[in-house]
Image (tube, rainbow, N blue to C red; front, side, top):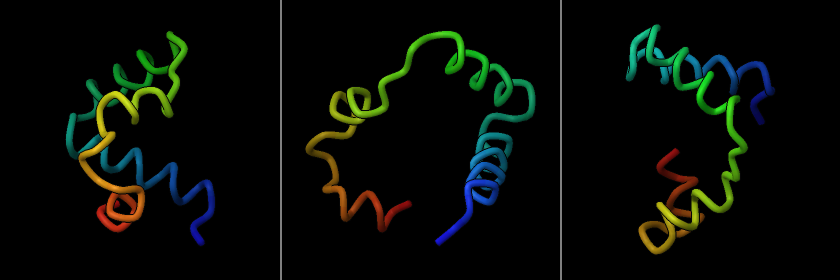
Length: 59
């Protein structure tokens, strides 16, 4: 099992490689500015696309 520090670093690396440094920072600021309910977001955007097991394997 990965540590929290490793997950944070991997997440930052993905954000930076995908969005670039500036937009990765903007993304983090946006997420921190407003309340974010991941469970609700997942249900609205991912529900029915992949099962939890499939999503976990893709990740």
